[in-house]
Length: 187
Image (cartoon, rainbow, N blue to C red; front, side, top):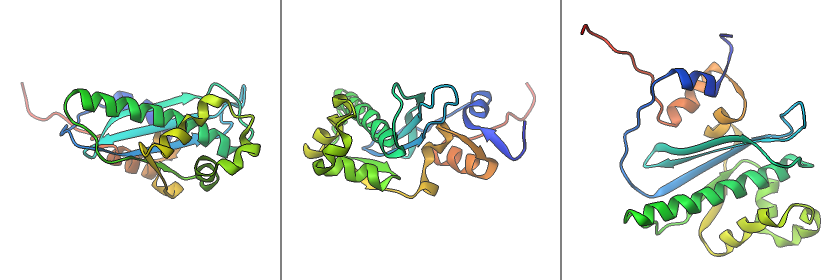
């Protein structure tokens, strides 16, 4: 393994994962994209993570279905996908009597994406984005979600979308509540 860089999922697959689960409100969803990251077709990689009471309970890393013209559009698609997941998680929590009264916070590090979602005036610039991705505007208008900016260096979901330096990988892993452990003692 290259000591300077590591591919997040490759290492996580080798390490046993444990979570401390306490049901509470879904507070955080982080998104990140690797714009045009696929060399073959220039499609972007979306990633998100949901944390429940400080523990990662749902995450994703996958190639987007469409090629986008900008990183803002790719992020728009990623945030929409994460919003759909947030609504599904809220319904699951409601089914187990853990109703979510607060809005789910969706963090996005792209100011242009936030502006496109919050301001329908941008529609002339986003007409070519498929209608299904505008679903997020409805969720924002209905107060199901709140969109907040976070800086790129605070993106836990980076671990799902790109190779990281070891220090950033460890920071993301710890932020997700994934802990390395070793067994000691004799049988």
